[in-house]
Length: 417
Ligand SMILES: Cc1ncc(COP(=O)(O)O)c(C=O)c1O
Image: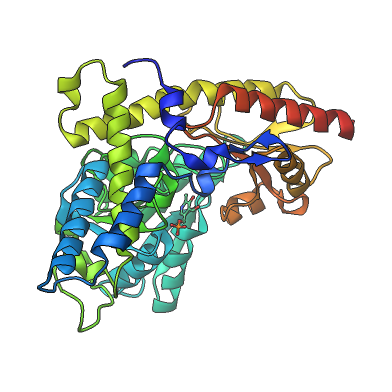
């Protein structure tokens, strides 16, 4: 792979021209949603200007809309490593998961069990917890608070012949911990359970291969990887029999349409397909051998590898720089454990919101709070101090921006004493 060409990446994002108080804006809020390259903006605009219509009609723009949605479905299938009839679009991950959970519950019996984790985002907890209304037993696997990883023994102990489904995040949007979802899928299937993966945070940081994971369902959101605000759901073709989706008469019964309620966000879908093309071109741009990335799936995988290879040393430097500051405590997995480039910390004596505000005034856009990893932040005992400060790296961030964060936090530590 060629050295990462961050100038090539940055030149494509018009938002990066923004300044705050005379300083260049550093978008370190990627885990909340990334910025969007010009080509995605163009795809959204082109759809609305030239092809805007509803679907399945018999005139030009409706046929073009059908073709654009089909095209984006194929692109998203290449992003996930599946076939396009296994990809459904929807409002966002949470809404798709809520619908999926209700659809799965209709095939379950009271007393059947679902296993969630304490590490996960509420989008991968709440939809399953709601099933208790239907007599489903929801069990919560513990997080090891010292290592901020799943307590695998505790998790495994919850699995039994009543387990119908296991839900797990691919990566924590609060700590960056990457979970071994392949191991979880294997263990889930060993007890006859289905496996759901929340890949929303992971999707920006590594290539997803649903066949390799062996999961039955996986959800992600295009706005976390350079696209518009829409969600995607993978449903393994044969897993459809385990879901009886909430469906209206107007809806087609076939996958992938059976999970798509009402008129979709066509322009968002057009943009999501283009976001995948952006990642594929990133792969082509950095590949040593053009033949190896001739097909789009291979180019997407190469693009994600390029992103990961670029972000990991930046994250390591950020961790090193912050760890050296007195009063800073980083809440990530242990060194050597798979992680994303998302780095969260606390500053002794400061509320997270005050740290984020001070950084924001310097053009450093970082999040504070629990980011809906609410259970984890509660368990960590951080609610009273405003949760965590989260610095999220994306491929358009730079080593200079990382140093700006370290310097800005150093300045705060000297103020707090
Ligand atoms: C790990 C994780 N899961 C789920 C979600 C929810 O995604 P959506 O906003 O698409 O519903 C998020 C959003 O931040 C997330 O980071």
